[in-house]
Length: 537
Image (cartoon, rainbow, N blue to C red; front, side):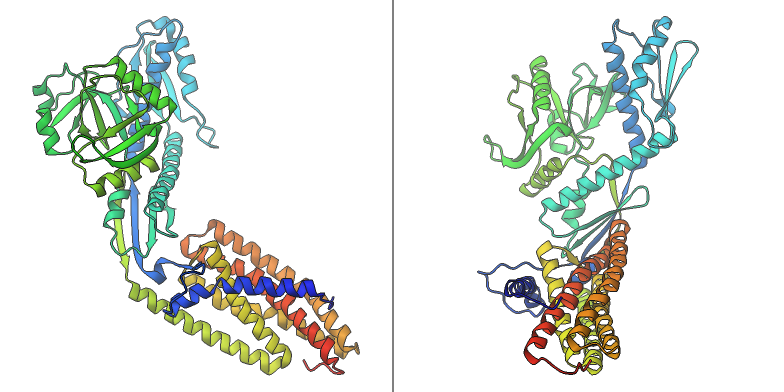
């Protein structure tokens, strides 16, 4: 138990010093001391409450999710019935009142139509309900109504997707350790440390980046479009800027509502420049399926116009002079380099499944964060000093071993956090203070057990060996329960709670290593050299 071969001592010391050294760049940064550039500099990222930054609360438009489901179902129904053998003819589809309804031209095909439509519905999670209700009225009219359970699941799925899209967009900006979490059914909290001006971030997150390519209805009357009269099968889409509207001769154009290509089939988007006039544009690349559809669309509609629509507004409506092959294209408009770059980021990250609106915005200044760090360090220093004094006064030499182990424990926690790139928050500092007090618990258990063993008449070496052996069981059990609590806090907690859980979990491992393994190695070395006849503990 107390035998430590040379390789084991070297391994313990090497592991301790390497991890502790990883904390030095963070300590230099806090002390405003320069760190040598030639050396690696892993640092602990500071959270919003310590480094300052921006807090933004986004709210989703739930009604938009329902409208999108109606549009998607309409297109799916048309496609399924068109491909049926033989084809099932239907009249116009109405989407009034939040339901889809259409009439079969041949009432005898009701059963066949139901068989085609039923696979388009599915179960709404574990509710036991389907996401769409299908009814047949008057013998030949189908009415498809989204169920409450299905709509709830669609909103939840849309919010999960929105969180991931927001995360990708923020990561593309190069920010470190943002906090992005759902709040309630339709809100997302975004916290970005170190960002003092959230304007660019708000513009990026507020952009849905829903890209569509749709054919322009050349037969639509410009006067009707100007008056807002929508031709059958079309939709009226306004231009994004006045110059494009003037070039098109009207403030809006009519495009085919169904068909076209969506931007979810993009594989890449980047800011570039037009070779003809050197203006900023966004170059996009489709995947294989999207490239094939884009080539087919342009091949079948040469000399016709197609509109490039972003978030419900027309960027441009160029004429298809020849088929566009190769799966790539350019989006032009009144872009600056910055706006084109932001659009490229948004397109690469994917379109938001639902519009997000900024409903709350806060900026935390770095001065407040610096004050939090100062007070946290003061609390840590006072707590550490009291623990050190108590341990040395109570256990003498063994208290000194516990104090040295405590210092290495703090350095190793910082080193592990720096190597993992985790974020330190104000609750994380509280976790540090708690770890300092709890770290010496293991040593207290060991030393008190050694006292009991000596009172029983055991020799010094046997008392020390039994003290570590018997106390280790209680130490491991106690730390296992704390570890389970820390994992649960991290899994189900929000950003600040997670910051506390991270420090707690890392501190459990480092405190056991330093408080048990390192102190046992030091005590064993002292026993071999001093061979004491009495144990003053």
